[in-house]
Length: 296
Ligand code: PAF
Image (cartoon, rainbow, N blue to C red):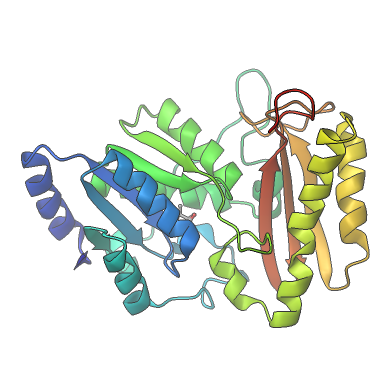
């Protein structure tokens, strides 16, 4: 893997790649790479001859008091994982390279003309005001630096994927998006760089999160419960008695805008965010078809 830290160097390298007629795939990350990121790299590889992984802990998407300073950083480890996975270019800019001056222009979700709330008004966006404007702004900047043909994002951050898809559509960005299924540890915990914050005991408690989502899916698949409020009650009940786990939100939404639904459908999404000790974890699942309607 070739590591570059400046936008000029990156663009020069990619000019050569395009001159050969190769397609470029981008995997935007904040580093601390894990198997979830490796799945994104593999997905990008299926669509591009040259895979670029960006490693940039974006200050714009952290609010004051969040874990910007503590966020795990280990570029040497990221580089060797990227290298082993066959990544072509690792783009690891300093903050000053991405933000040479404090930004005064940003990409911000807006309310839709049909009166629905902005896509960042619910779930993660409601708990972390300004977070998604920070994400969209840096993703737009990374798209401008790399001009990728395809870019891969994880399904674990489902609201981020929905917002990036909307940005690509609304700003006519010439990039194809790949949304890659969540990778989980054998015990069901969704992989996240923030899992590194968990003690062994907290990690065991955190398993209540995928269990709650699983209980919601089981109630729909096996018992035919379609009422979203009833399914939310099932999820909350399985998290209620776990000490040290506090739910920020848990709900059922449609997959396009993540607006809450009253009745579950095959493509509905269950989303949860919970704090385990001082660590915030998010997860989601889709419901899939109920038993007897084609589920294997
Ligand atoms: O998902 C992430 O790691 C970040 O939000 C992203 C997309 C790299 C933007 O900083």
